[in-house]
Image (cartoon, rainbow, N blue to C red; front, side):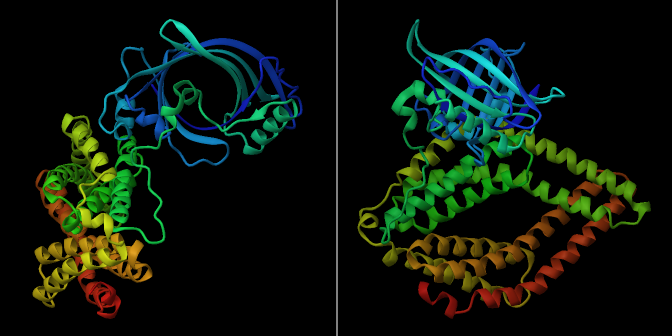
Length: 503
């Protein structure tokens, strides 16, 4: 069974003779109990290069706490107080890592296999702070940790971990930490036990650590920073795709891929493009797999809202259509999860990180200032976009609008690539095109939804087909509204003055 929590904890360092202070009164009405002694053994898994740990991710197997042998993955989460992270635990045996945990960390591992990297043995004295009704608020773990390498103990250290439970107020954590400091405990840098066990290698920068750009970056520096940001967006959101709790997981993964592919194409004159083309092709494969699920997610959001607007007599048929769409989404998602587990995806993640961190740059890219090079890269796609818009005329068809949407995205991303060099002018221009992209994206979604509703209607009975037709009509109406909004949005975004910096 899977168990998830958001972890809030503070670590403190203590010496061998330290004695835990009296915790009565740490919170009104709360009393301490214990300590209870337990012996824990934890085996940590990572890649050979410690990619997980360097991103703030851990995967461990632990025995000795509770009745079950437990696998736990701790994922990065925005820190609120001390250290706050998403923690997911699943009962299981040491020799078989749960597939969910493998999938969750697959992106951060960049396709590399996981192996045991450390074994820690802990003698734990646990004190629980609880209300008088028995509801626990916090635990204080006094741990003596032995780092085992082979058959010998390589090092020992002692530390306290103060952790909130059952949604207790963060103020309690402050009060507990104050008590410990008053007794002589020392704040530490919140370095996990595993990092201490593995030493300097665990503190090396992550493969996709975003570089800091100076005031006048070279074209190479600006391009590398952009590629790393996009690659990191893809990798960081794979866990969200696996958890499947928020539609933004798949969306942001696709955004990372789109930006990567666009930037590589825009900057092809600065790169050895022959080495880049295979990666763009493979990114397109993963984009398609993610896109199938994303299209169905958008459709389901629309259907759930639109069904409520139908006459009650039509809702039975509409529910049948919705059920078929849910079946399609489940099948597409299972295929996506299977694609993420393939060797093809592992190779793609590895190559994406490698190329983003060390792109095959031509010599001139490392010499020329970004301010002289990147704005000029926008000119060609901008001309193509304007030519395409003129070619389509006042009433473009659906195919033409699809082409226009692709061209708009490319110019927008090119402007954002140039923004570190061109500044506010490029950012303002990109924002204008983002609004055009929103209109065209909405139109594209209506087209996809209308086409899928035709297919869904054919797979249901007559009442379902009728409801699918009604729902499809709503999509056509939305599409017509998008067409009406496009000319005005385009006029504001595409003016010559707005793009003079790139011409």
